[in-house]
Amino acid sequence: MIPYYIMVGVPIVFYLLYGGTNQYFNNEKKQRMTIFIFFAILLTLLICRDKTIGVDLSSYLPRFNFVKNLSFANIFKEFEGEHGYWLLNKVISIFTTDDQWFIAIMAAISLLPIARLYIKESENALLSISIFLILPNFSMMFSGLRQAIAIAIVAMSFKFVKEKKLILFMLVILLAMTFHTSAFIAFLLYPIYHMNITKAKLFVFVPAILLVLIFNKPIFEFLLQFLGDYGEKYPYEETGAYTMIILFALFLIFAFFVPKEENMDKNTIGLRNISVIVLMLQIFALSNFVAMRMNYYFIIFLPLLIPKVINRSHERNKQVYQFMGLVMAVFFFVYYIFDANSGSDVLEIYPYKAFWA
Image (tube, rainbow, N blue to C red; front, side):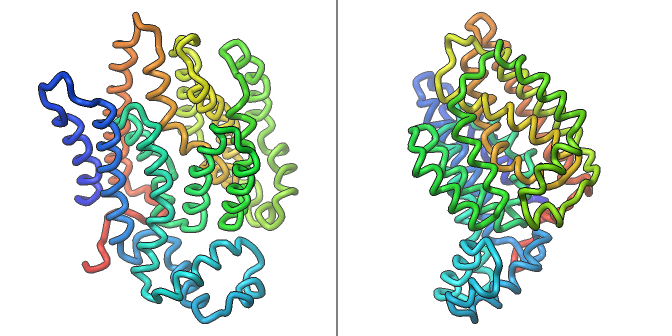
């Protein structure tokens, strides 16, 4: 577990020591460097992990070795969909057939776009990192290669969402779908981001959220009809995902009731809008794991939202909310360490093992 402790501890130590007693140090640079250090260590762990780290690698590596012997044309014959992923496998195999290099390249592709997004957008490095660690996206990077890359591509699309470049946004999401079909849900990112959901308008969504909570099974079974093989592969099943529902509900309430609306900028409002669909999709996750996996494309933005909300609170309460942000960061770091040692490791990423061990 020591590598994971280093991943958590080094950014915290840097954050606490950077600038020392110098009141003129660049706080923005401090935030960027802290996140950079975290993702640099995480990338190192992903690159150097053994083949046994991540339950899905046992199926991805044989397929990589299978694809390297196919022609580009035959890839479309052998695989029914998500051809972007298999074509990437083929391209990698042209340069290397080594499994460890394959793992390393996939790690860089799935992590760097998210790292860039966080470095650019986060306003509180430790809080963003601590929230990121408790989200399922973190574990997914060690195991589910196809969806990890699809999530990274969706993270790249955020630039086009902000700039209202709809065509480029749609092309990027279509690319993400060639890696994991579930990425189609990310088309909702654009309209949701540009809505103007205020505190007053939020109450319009409350009945919809309650209806989803009560009738999540029949509603999602209806939607599964449009997912083809996914609907057949993942039928109704109780998932017990109540903890995340409570967490995302608290995040949503925090995001709407903490900030002073006059201080809210377009980007923070857009990120706050995303928290609404995060909660609704997570409620669907009570009855189907597909909904939970679809939510991965949206929850990746929550670690950016909470710090921005705190920084846009009422001046008279800002110190209180900043202290709350510190408490949240400490709590989430402790929760991550506890959870990593609890044995509830579905994706089998703990304890860490390097490929040379």
